[in-house]
Amino acid sequence: MAMQLLCVASLWRTIAWRSLPPFLIGGVPGVPAGAYLLLHLQTDTYRAVIGGLLIAYGGYLLLRRPARPAAHRPACGTCSRASSVA
Image 1 (cartoon, helix red, strand yellow):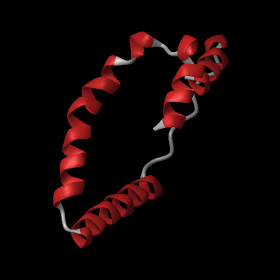
Image 2 (spheres, helix red, strand yellow; image 1 turned 180 degrees about the horizontal axis):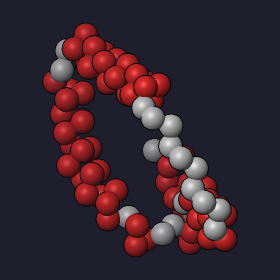
Image 3 (cartoon, rainbow, N blue to C red; image 1 turned 60 degrees about the vertical axis):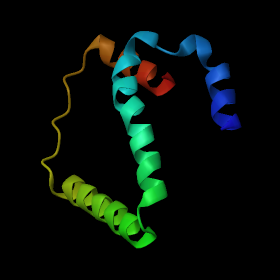
């Protein structure tokens, strides 16, 4: 927790505050729901669910169609640099 606070404090000025609401929409209900499930699910059930999700996602990544590369535009480099900072 302390490391997360230190990271936020050091990156405070570079955070894109306008892009924050979608993350909050998913995080606000997700954190309490996840905490509840961690406290109330049996360990074997939790392990099986997380393992199943990881296997399904890995299979999806292996079997999906490859993405076509985007046409090079001057803004592409700027966008990739901005996303690596945020």
